[in-house]
Image (cartoon, rainbow, N blue to C red):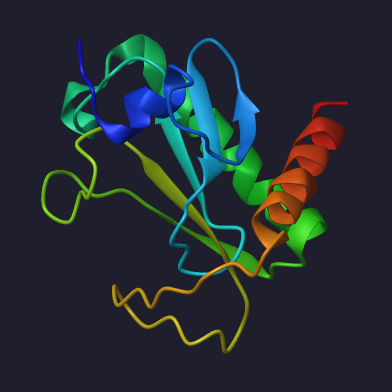
Length: 140
């Protein structure tokens, strides 16, 4: 059984500011975001990379990534999103994850240089709550 950080989040052994959870996928705020509201979407089952992703998890994983990208405009005022995935190289946790990052014109993100920021006290929970609300509203 895998014991990486993301498996520990799935199993409730580590706390993360979750914005979505179901039986197949979990989404939570990156603790070192590119921009505030940066979300990681992962399968609940341990999968190393995109190449290892079982067919039956493709739809749940990418549907949730798309829903989160759509929620970033009403929840955070984002003008767009950056959606990315590393496989092995630059994959800081050996568990497949999709980055969904809120973007605004002039935000300073250039190419694949990802400057990092930090949340002030209480901001992380606030961003997670706003994204949860937007995801719930979109679900109807």
